[in-house]
Amino acid sequence: MKEFLSDRINSLAVSQTLAMAAKARELKNEGKDVIGLSLGEPDFNTPDYIKEAAVNAINQDYNSYTPVDGYVDLKNAIITKFKRDNNLTYELSQIVVSTGAKQSLSNIAASLINPGDEVILPCPYWVSYSDIVGLNGGVTIEVKTDISNDFKMTAKDLESAITPKTKMLWFSSPCNPSGSVYSKEELRELADVLVRYPNVYILSDEIYEHINFCGGHFSIAEFEDMYERTITVNGVSKAFAMTGWRIGYIGAPAWIARACNKMQGQVTSGANCIAQRAVITALEESPSKITYMVDEFKVRRDLILNLLNNIEGFNCNTPDGAFYVFPDISYFFGKVIDGYLINNASDMSLFLLDRALVATVTGDAFGDPNCIRISYAASQEQLIEAVNRIKKLLS
Ligand code: PMP
Ligand code: GLU
Image 1 (tube, rainbow, N blue to C red):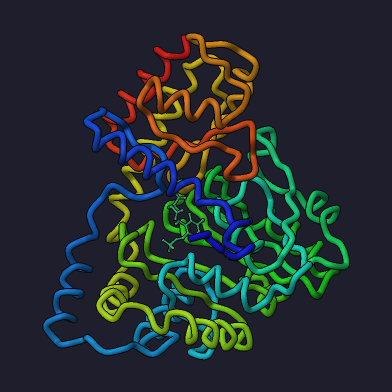
Image 2 (cartoon, rainbow, N blue to C red):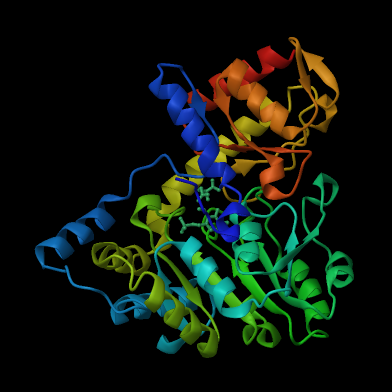
């Protein structure tokens, strides 16, 4: 029978982070010694105090459908977290809990974007932003940045991308994939542009908030003049090593939260009951309970940067957060190595997988064709071995 897929699904790209992880898994299953540095997923276990809360919830018979926008006590824990960590004040009507921050992003796009609306994405951006926007009829406007300015968008860059059709700006800080963190001053410069364009909304993705090595996280919604137009997205996947539990959330103006609630009510309903109970504990406990993971990520960041900087042609910024390095490898373009022509970052990423058995992700997936992304959410031994293999192959 002929396959009749919709134009929508046909025009959607496969998530390249997930595709590369699947490819690496396949090779591993074939018995190949692949080092997977493609997926942004902590290699720690979920902390015991959070697991215990989940076990208690099962024993207490939490098994029914949950409220679409989340349990009230979880929403209260999120409100307390926003106040404690971000100095942001939200009410219950402004919080929506979802099945991962990815669903939060999708709800926001579906709720705010009309066909033809423009969404500004500073490059590099997280892989799924462009497809989630596109799926909802939005047009992405990429703003190029590069290693010379630590992959950060300036006020001037932002202003030149704004048109009468601009609906939103989407960005992450700490950034996946560059690890860049916008300071309060840098965000103020962007906000000074945005105050002149009152119809432009901001999606501030802060899922790497706690994985921050520069000591300061600032939320753009903390500026009074940005609060009413900002949707702050967060989740527990990264900092709490809870990727598979699938809980994300937003703090937003009530009318946007209402719209996300309506969308979610038709598409998936409320998020998983046990996971929500566990996240109450995750958020209520002090963030100091997870600093052992952040400290380890910092050690690994320093390790991998040192190692990569010893490879000719790898040009790295110093990431201040998240757990990725995003080296510019354009030095290799046009070169033949070991009989293999490297024309672009995808070629390099495939070459490293084929010949060094190291899985990375091409920068094209993040809107930057000069770079590759390497996740250092892996053991120090694996990182040393991976970079040794890369170095040997390229020299
Ligand atoms: N935003 C960014 C920047 C991410 O790296 C991820 C990672 N998956 C997400 C959102 C989605 O996170 P999740 O759906 O696991 O909460
Ligand atoms: N966010 C992670 C990454 O960037 C997980 C994969 C995904 O959700 O796409 O690799």
